[in-house]
Image 1 (cartoon, rainbow, N blue to C red):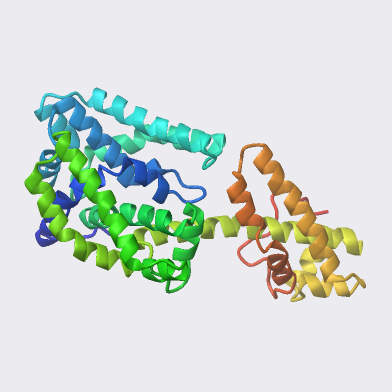
Image 2: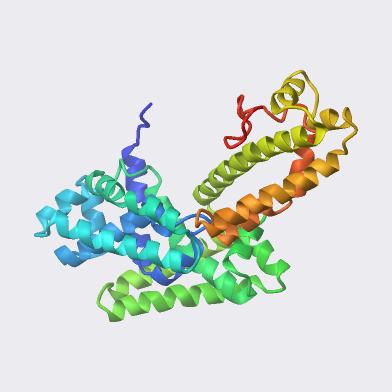
Length: 369
């Protein structure tokens, strides 16, 4: 079902964007710090693709970012804006693709992506750029202006919180992901003050904006207008946790990772249970479908469930480490999968229906004897 976007919503988003775009494109050094989770690339999100495309349009048309946004909000597609201002679409595509490809390569070098993940991301660049170029502002997303406004401050706030507390990117993301966590609570928990982080955030934004004025990218009156809105925006951000859209992206990613690990874990538990009890995997599966837990199956053959868990931990650890060696996982991703693995397996051993959601094939690599 298509969502109707009212004129009022568009205008509200437009006003937010015209202010926030002054900041959003200026945080190139910060965005790669914040928006990436363990297995996310900055340009994978539509926002980063838009940023690369708009930066390329600036180069090829000599239009400012604000002028481009005004035309986009007015109803033109970015392709129409390019041709109307003497640019070529092919030049914009090539420039944006270079920017995004370089970001992928840097993510691989920094260990945030494996080469296999990078190849997958690279293959999607052309279609992502085409989607941005042909979309009107309204079709690009009802909340795009709000997201730009939030992220303009969020990127600086995240960097300032990192610098002030001394937390790593992943440590800060983890703490912000806790139930009820806000920037303010994380800051104070790490024995720093909110005022320290506010000062640092304001400095990051002010320095970037002043540099934009020096480079002729912004007028001083535009900077003054943005800075006047900054205290209220910063207060709102610092008393909140991760932005909703980033929480959703993180939760979706974590759910997919957990589902894959659960499927593999159940399959390996069935295999090890069969090996240690002398049953076939088919017999183990049938008893589980009849209502027994894997622990029940093990005990019926005088096998300690903990012995099966220990053997399964060893097997899965070897498999996951091999994926790191093969470039299919980063070390950070492997560490996340191995964390609390013994407890997860114990829970699955005692679960009434560990096969639920796994269909008839608990592990793709495990044959049923």
